[in-house]
Length: 177
Image (cartoon, rainbow, N blue to C red; front, side):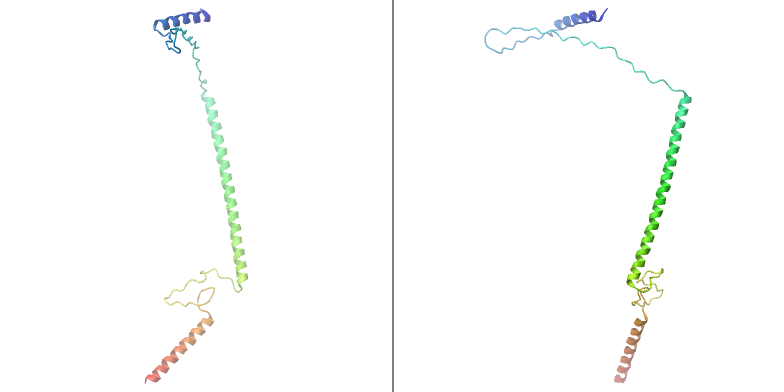
């Protein structure tokens, strides 16, 4: 049977089914007063002709030899990438070390400039200046820039104060006797 004969047969069957079920629409709506409304008959819609579904074939399975080659290629690519990553890490570490050396040199230069502007000896690498580094309970606080301790001038001033205090005590003893 050709396609046109099939279509014609289907159209006829569809028309009969629609007629039997009362699917023919009748327009009884009155839009104007006057003569009775005319009945219109609408034909049934044409049937939809669909082609058979197309099967999608999956790709043929590869042999184990081809799969082994693919796995080896993937492993080689991963190894190359790991080597590239290690080289990049070494380069980054070298750049960081170089920058750290530059920073240390810059700090040393800044300290030298500060010492030159301040005059005198540079600070020692020992204890930080201005901090108490003594091990005893008595602390001598003075004006020594490097150690925070007393200078010779500070000691002489303290000796004059002690001498004056002792002279005052002796004077009070003489008056009290």
